[in-house]
Length: 378
Image (cartoon, rainbow, N blue to C red; front, side, top):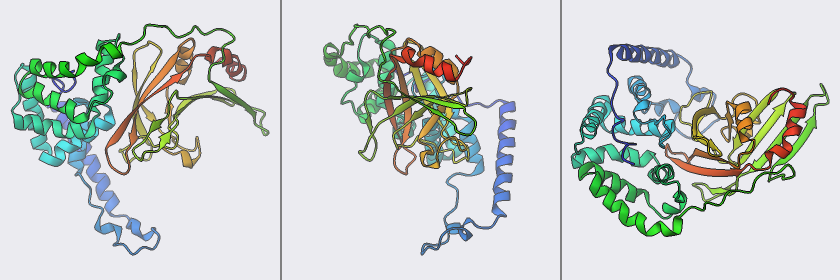
């Protein structure tokens, strides 16, 4: 499990990337200068007794710092699917810059990278400085669960981490960095060994889908009165709801939809919870991962209700997957689809990682309805 945060922290310093970074900084600065010439936004705001917004609009980070953060996201984003999303990586990098500035953050990452890649150990101060933003932004219990799922498929990973605290996992990482991996693994063994007998995953296969098995899918078909086109929608509730940061139960829903006879869509609804999105851009996106059946997990940055595809009331509560037709094809015969998403946690930059499972059996029974109204798409 230590490979996630060790050996992946090298900072880029090639001349081409430096030139690109400078160009990005200049472009951001030009945008900031252009924005400063516009009329203050407070002239359009409703009357209020608060002080004008112009007194509190100082950016948390400079344009140069924002550009550096974006350029170094690959330091923590794990393209191999080990558990850190772009949203979490951005939060981590912001924590480094906020505490140490660009120079200090770069130096810390270089020291950590050099020590861990050479098999050395970190000083206690460097380990604490490195782990502080990681613990604040990433879901270490979730990373541990994913690691168990990859390395020990015969064990129920969710059962293994049930009751495990973020602080305990953080202590394991700190021990690995300061005292060595063997010491940390011994500490982990104390927790894990007693849980293995009760958490052995069942080897029983899910029932084979038959032609008459409908599963939990719900279908609807509507015809447009103006152009006679059809909209066919398949809806599937997650096996279990999740409880958000406000202690409210949310029911995720997976949708497959065909509009106007050709427009296929696959999207995930969070049940009134919001996908985490800190970019502050007009075209909102979120990072998520999904897995269909036994196929490898896929990481994706996807839009959260762009434009007018759905009502504004669903803004950032729905995520559209890009490879819609391919996803539907892969769902044929698959017994489940699992999502791992970051959910907004109140009004902070911290996120809640949510794992949701959909029992997709029975889709083949309903697919003829979809192909009837979307011919040639599948």
